[in-house]
Length: 339
Ligand code: PEP
Ligand code: MN
Image: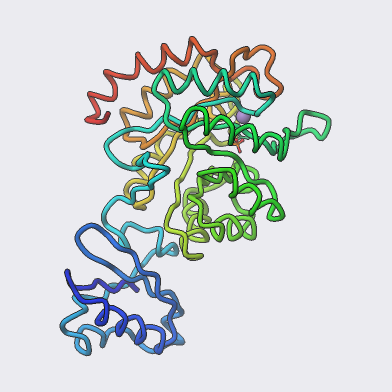
């Protein structure tokens, strides 16, 4: 159930409503919007007492009580009609500006990372991506630099001021990764690893949740519910393509998820055309399409020497290609009413 509070109620009145929700056997999740606050009350409505008496019992504080019909509750737009925005060291994701997260698939060396970080920043990116723990299909392929990679990301952040996004692969690493990153990435292969999602949520860092390789949108939204229901409001959905029968692309980038996530949820939607297409030559078109359709951010792989990359060589843009992409995106951003 969603409890819509009246605008400008006092802290005391709000606390009284929260106490009553708990007394009736529900877990309250407070969501503060610009105009007003709503409370998501999570609990089984069949076994608990009804919340419908709240507007009568708290006439000065509670405006209405609404059921959420969907299986996902806190993630749903019914619970939170306004877009959620996520503040990453002053970079707002989900606002007017389409934020660009760019960097190598894997952190490989100080030289590789810093060169990329400075170049993507100069071209207009605001967040640096780079995997330190890599989920590789083969155990014989490059697995990432681990802690050393995290430290290099931290160094790049200090040198450039860019925010950092990196993947969390294991619950055991949650605290360590959270210490170095600004956004935790949950990869496609772990998108329904619920214990990992809970561990990521509990770090308090924003969580970017990739869509799984064969995940339905409802399953993705429900996976996102694990983040929000663990008291972390800072969730980003990231479409990175799904496995289909097609072989010309590595995955099939499902751009229909942009309007669908926008309709169903208040959390921002990020598009990753790099994993999505698996081909550097398609990244530009995918980005233009994503911007036109309302994506809130793009996650793009960039490498100073893509041919020599230790992972995902075919899909990484060179520094020059990335700069050209940023220039060519401008009219598409303007046409979409974005910056
Ligand atoms: C990546 O971002 O490099 C990555 C491994 O992504 P995904 O989990 O989408 O495959
Ligand atoms: Mn990659």
